Length: 195
Image (tube, rainbow, N blue to C red; front, side):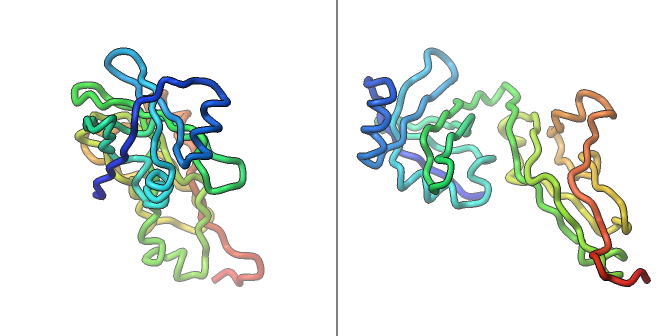
C-alpha cells in the first residue's frame, strides 16, 4: 500500500473569490472534518494531482499535514473540473480508529482469462468500477477483487460475487438481497460463432 502524504495550510479567507485566487496560486481549497469544528485548508495543487493519478489514493488512509501537524484522514469528497485534469475542492475526514467509515473502493476484475467463457471467445464488460463499503479504518482494503474464473457465457456478476476481506461489508447488501445489483456481464461479441 502506498503511503500518501499531503501538505496543507489553514486558511481564513472564504468564498468563491478567495477560492479562485487560491487556484491561480496553485493551491486547492479544502475542508478537514471530524472531531470538532471543520477546518478550512488549502492544499498544494501539484501534490494533490500527482497523488490522484495513483491507484488506491481514493481508498487509502492519507497523512494530511496541516501547518506541519500530521493527522490521518481519508478523502470524503473531491470536486473536479468538468474537462480539465484539475481538482476544484477537496474534503478530508479525520479517521477515528474506533468508528466504521463508509468509503468507495475500486473493483478489480481478475481471472477472466481462466474462465471457460473466455476460452470460448466471450468478453466481459464491467458496469461498475467502485463499490461503497463499510469498515473500520484498520480493515480498509485498497481494492476489492471479483474472481471471474467460473463465470459462464451470458452470466451477470453481482455485488455478492465480490471477495470481501474480514470486517468489510458492502453497503448496498446490508439493505437486503434485492440490492444485489449487477457489476458486469459476460457476453459473446457480435459476429463471434457460438461453440
